[in-house]
Image 1 (cartoon, rainbow, N blue to C red):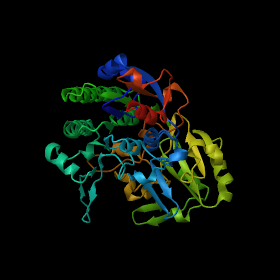
Image 2: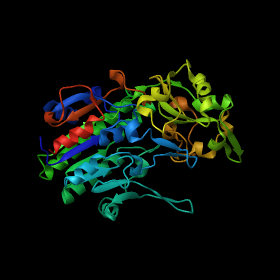
Image 3: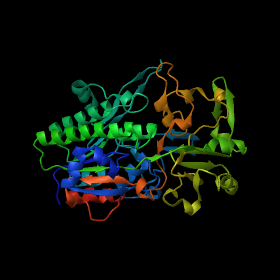
Image 4: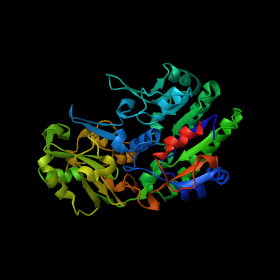
Length: 435
């Protein structure tokens, strides 16, 4: 097929079973096509999006998680945002080479990419401690124009305890604003609303069902808005990047490494801080998997032995066994949780010694993903240190239908009859749509 406009909507957490609560999206599936979607391991946002937009697996594109440990400068960095981390050509480059304009809305690792238009959160942190709402945009001045017409992107509703549909509403409004004025032919919209209730309360909870219904309203607004612009030939592709599974167990890799004498901390006035430079091994955790970085390769067997056979740990991978994580950026050892377990980053044994940032919403200070931030007490402005509050997670290899997402196309020509569709196929689906 040859599409004039293609709109790819990333909806992490979307499963086929959720369509029973989403009549607008189900109608699109009925008229077009619906398949199961199987992400590459690790099944978390940044690697899956990189796989979709490069047609390659993590061991090739190098995005080995939502966070990295940079060995050359001894720094852990989550949600880095820079496009240069992705190795190899991306769909943006291929489209630009053919004169096809594109837009990216909150795509991960997108800053400085070859997309024609880019908007992604980038708050400004001032010396006096203030944080100013802002977004990185391309071309320069694009966000200022959106700000004038739509107001600030509501970052406080995008992540954390105040997460709500408001951030998605703004993104849909902004995408329609740009389509009206510039008509970008390929549009990638990150639509994470289903992710949060499923993690807080479980993927089959009443709250998760309510989130599906809220998201479906926004799907309708997007589809109707595009039609109102006279773009009746636009095609839509909705991709559930991964599925959330129920979790009821917690495993603390960094506490175990510390107990084994391999992880080092420093006592400071505000608590115990991880000292990566002095640690023989430490884990950068990411939902249901962790990259364990080891200073001396002779300790690999010892570290593996800590986790082998441990309840809640499904696999311990080393060397070529790491498969899609067999990349220099990954840890020397990779551990994977059982589908009903997940890994917090905590290294302290007594909550009285937790570092101050542990009780805040600070996605950049923590050397690991912390969904417990969604439970912060708004009166005290403190995050509880109770990882058992989390009822849904993801990241482990998608090996069963419960771990598959859903992919829905408004035109059956976009999808083959093969199910499940893999994330690396998305690049080629997009490329074919314009040829």
